[in-house]
Image 1 (cartoon, one colour):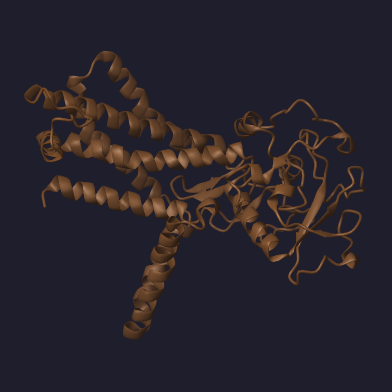
Image 2: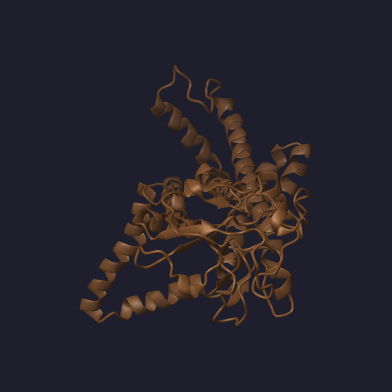
Length: 418
């Protein structure tokens, strides 16, 4: 097997593993072959290896591998960030010197900007405070969002940080901190994605998408020009009169003529769809007014609804509230209309526990009847990601009793389980 084929196979294998690892756990793909492959690769196969290792070495090998995996994936260290930077830097080192003499001045300017942007946004995403909640800023984060009384209920305390959990926050076991509007922990930036750096993370994804797409397109353009010097009828789209075997033979000839640029072009083309998929999914979650963490929580609620364990009852807008546990949120134009709870015995919650709300508890069978108060529409959602203390305008500052419900039904968005 020649070096080019080996490079292609390695790139495809890495891209495939990364795709399954990132997307196999997503709620929208839970019942698809991607989720099945995720369970096969990351659950069933390791279980088989563990049983074999238990029989042969009493588990010593798998314990060592588990320590390495946990060190890489569940501790804060820059290893994956360095790996990410090296992939970009080495590819650009192989690619740029060979294309530089062949491109115009305007193209060179575009290349410089395209190459620089991912490094800038990577630095900003890594160095920015993702939204660490401390004693000093706890009151501020408590007033950023209202409790929706579904995913987030007032009065819950973080057992590690020892303070009340603000709405939309989550304690990160890797960062060892509570994160405001927590999305997920990302090993590629060695930090969480949250209220303080979500916009930098989104721009990092976008700039990397542009880098790989532009690099692949420019490489193909130069490759086409080189092949057509010798074979004028060749084009990127296989000509009707040309057999596929001859088409790929000429393509291979062109790639072999400059193996460094060819390998870098293939790397860009084969990884670009994966990065674009990550970017589009992240943007889609913003469109839905949710985070990765919240999307997972809604999936669990959907299963509780299917099993008959979920209940709700109305919340009065002017209900009395403990302002220490549930402070007012002046900037947010929407407030919850119901409290939703899941029980362990499929029986309504006990009235003795004095849950908020009034009236009888009723089953919730479908997400169609549930409103997401954090979904203010795409442009408002995007504004909330990019601007601290984003002001929504209409409805903001009104007393809770006078605010109208503006959130949208969860079932209208495909990011939620149907």
